[in-house]
Length: 201
Image 1 (cartoon, rainbow, N blue to C red):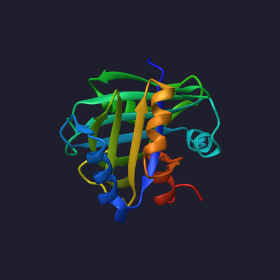
Image 2 (image 1 turned 90 degrees about the horizontal axis):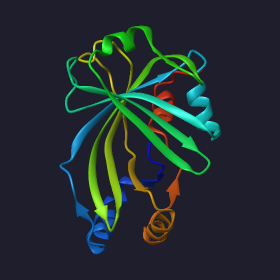
Image 3 (image 1 turned 60 degrees about the horizontal axis):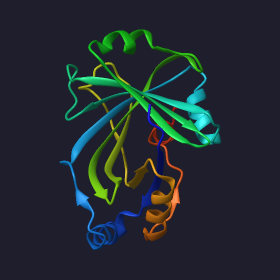
């Protein structure tokens, strides 16, 4: 797992053009095609992962199964564990051939115990390169309560646009953020999904 930093910037939808003008001015390069990203997030029965994220506790984790493109039960999927430490973040990824087992019986984590699928987050992501750093632009964010039938989901829309600045170099990311005409913020798509769907009373 590579250590990295990952800061998020909440962009008002009405200021989208300002962001793209800034990217053009800085000669940011689009490096991949825009694609649809879908993540099934896991948590235990006490929603401890959600609580730790809201409270900013460190170290903590996020557990998710990720796949790309349109929703299909036979889509190729990966399990990702995101780690947050006081000094940065890291992520482990591995392919999974059969998701029915993890969706049915859950994922056992040494910190959070048995975690079951809770929500699905879907959005469009565009990728940019600025110098040696990577920026991702997420929009059309939607949330749904997990349903084993991925073809039968009811989504709630979120108008937010999120710019993420990702780097392995603390000096470079500080310089980039000083030049971005927006303020960084704490934002978790998983936490937003829990709150938008009213899964915790």
